Amino acid sequence: PARDFWESGQVVAEVRSLLAGTNWEGCPVLPGVPSGHDLADNYRERIIKALEAATEGCGKRPDAKEDDEKELYFAVDHALPTHRGTVLTGTVLRGSVAAGSSVYLPSIGKSAKVKAIQSFKETVVLASKGDRAGLQVAGVPGLATTMQRGIAVASREALKSVKVCVAKVRRVDFFKSEMKTGGKFHLTVGSTTVHATVTFFGALEVSKDPSGHGDGLRPPAPGLYASQATYLSSYGEGE
Picture (cartoon, rainbow, N blue to C red):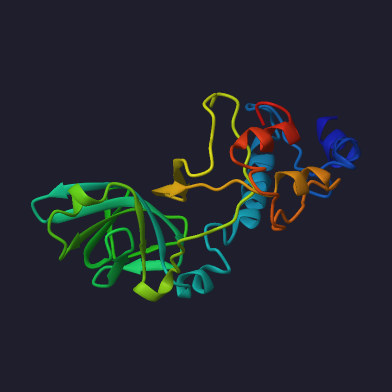
C-alpha cells in the first residue's frame, strides 16, 4: 500500500544517499504525493509545518543591529532634482541612515540634511545595510548638477582621502592604446571616479616572483618603466 511505502522511509533513505557528499547533505527530506492522492492532505500539512520551522527567523539578520551601528557608507548611483530638494538613489553598503540625520558628500565637500527616505516606493524612517533607497536631501543647492555618482557617509571623518596609492595593474584586452607614465586615466573606486596620473614601476620585480604576489616596491632602473610596454612584456600582451 502507498502508506506503507512512504512510511517505511525507503524513498527518504534513497534521497539522502544521493545527497551524501554534496552541499545538501543532512538537509531535511520530506516525502510527498501527487495532488488528489488519498494521502495528499496528510503530507501537505507535514510539508507546511516543516517549511514554517525551517524559515522561522528568516529575514531577521542576527547581526543587523551590529551593522546598523557602523558608520554609514551609501553608494550613490543617481542624483535627481525635485521641487523639494535632491533625491540620491543608491545602496546602503554599511551602517544605516535615518530620516532627520545628516550625510557628508566627500566629492563636493558638503553636508546635507536627510529629509525623507523611500525604499521600493514606501516611505521608511531607516535604511540599513543592503537596502536600496532614495534619500531626499536638502541644504545643498544645485546638488543634482554637481554630483551624479559617488558616496554619502556619516561624517567628514568617516572616510579617509588619499592623493597617492600603489596598485598592481594589468591592461584589459580591448584597450589597445599605449599607456605611458604621466598619462591621465579614470580611476574608479566604488561609485566615485576621478582623474589619476599614473607612474609605472615594479614590473620586473613582480615578474620574477613565482607567486605573482611581489610587492613591486623596489626602485626601478632609470627609464625602465617609461611606458606600460615593459610591464606588459612581463606578462604577455593583453594582460
